[in-house]
Amino acid sequence: MADKTLRKIQTQGVHHITIIGADRQTSIDFWEGTLGMPFVFDQPNLDNPSEGHLYFDPGDGRLITIFTSEDRKPDDTPVPEETGSLHHLALNVSQATFWQVPARLDARGVQHSGPVDRGFMDSIYFRDPLGLRIELASYRFEPPEGCRHADVMIEAHRIRVARGDHNIDKEHLADAIELLVRRDQQSLSDDRSARNPY
Image (cartoon, rainbow, N blue to C red; front, side):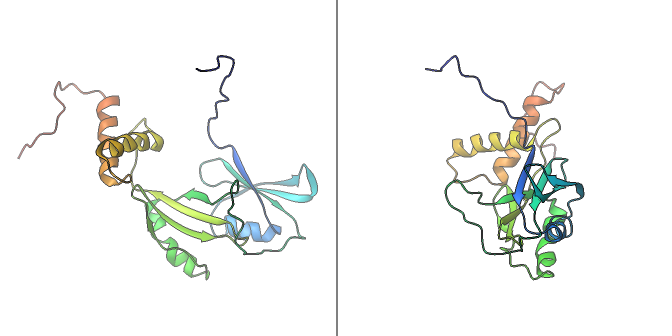
């Protein structure tokens, strides 16, 4: 039975992510110089004035912020991936960019996974100069007008489960997109079923 005194705290997106970085230049060279994120804001860490607090725009107007200290040097030892720890940070890239990533990481001498097929997206994994696992992810679909990627994903999940399939793949996505268009976009036709005009 639901507790009627409890109310949700409704979130509306990720506001920002803050990472403990090393020195200032390493942060700028990686987040802007490698990943192309504009460096948009710079001030002291208001909780620890001996540190800097750098802000980068990952491409959607949200923020990734880095606490920097000239006393901390880059250490590429993989960060712990234990219960409660961050496993990886995934960043969105277009398909056009995605297929350039291996060569651009290779040019920097960065080890990476190469393209990984995730069914509904493509992924490449590598570590930043401080050992944090980074994923560059690229959806294989665009949601219909007025829908979000999450809307397509939930419908694709329902289709996958109903069919008894192991994971979401392209066919589930295509069928989910068709379902969303049929449900959310009007038509003058009474019968919107598939036909063969040939």
